[in-house]
Length: 387
Length: 136
Image 1 (tube, each protein chain N blue to C red):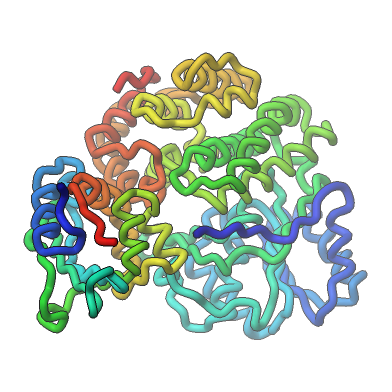
Image 2: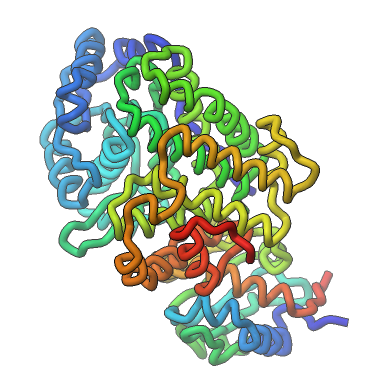
């Protein structure tokens, strides 16, 4: 037994106008100052006004949303008592909206105690709409959120199936001015989670279909949007791909590259998509060396030569590295700008964090501590995985 | 000829597999906790079966079938039907996925369980290595 969850998805040009049809009293928009400065928040407010809804704008979301900011936001939610909560922005804003919504519905709950095995009150007070302004995290379609406890200096993962947004609005107009570097980082996040979720031990027929198509779309359209951000057709498909991959990922799980990327991101403050994508080729090689992988399917979907699983994986790795080069991404930790002494000092902590990441359990081939250490070392130098 | 699932002998065999497993030792080296695994609806058993296991920093310190469920008050209790346990041991159901879908009902600190996902995987691997007879 397993479940398939998806928000109601409104996509394509003018998708944002769906907001004008909302029924209710008050919307609470959770976003950051950049989104406000770019005028994207105003686009949402215009639609809410057309719907006759009162609104409150909260624009204090930080790049890595903190537990303390979420608690502050939940307090304001309680004062305004909205019946719609709208997360608007990149993954941080959407995660912040999910977490604040949870606290609003469950006053006093300890976010660190929230887990996928228990059930929580949600939707008694408000429904959640997620509107991404990047094409990559898939947060609009998943039931997870990541917060940072700035007092305890730790990440808090919140995951419960009820946290899935009720609606995801995928409007390409909101990503037309995304800078190339962010386009690359977030697009590679979408690629990594789609490929990993296709290999996850939690994969299923529903997630497979979505992940495989997301990979096709990303390989076709990510180079185009990176080269020409105003390519409207490519932007629209890439924005859809991120949501499609997000639904696939939300109904399966990411795996080893995410474990390693999470560890790297925390210790070296590397953007999430860049970190996970850097490790993806190495973890593909590690996984295929253990047998039983499904990379040939993906290679075939991309029309790459696939005599067998090994050649399929090798050609997929080559294609990913070609794409990463086109997007001017680092292929090794050294290229990322990490020097050898800093790397060696951090290595035990990188290994410790990666091996306690929950997504390691859904990897097809689970590395031991020694394997992980070597994976990081090989990724530092850019060596092919031979174990 | 295998060992009957959920028998005391089966638990001893599991303990032996855990003690031989480098993978488990490495994955669970920082984790500690004891469990009752409760099997409901087991063929030939009038009552629920309680299997006790004590895990300590990569070692299995004790494993047995409890004759008196009140004898221990473990930190964790995982309860599932016989059919579900069989799926877990046959690697047809990931235990974490089983808990998300509530096919496996966990009592105890769930966050602590989630901090050792690799240990759970390795533990199941050890269970698969026990030649098991499944009562019909």
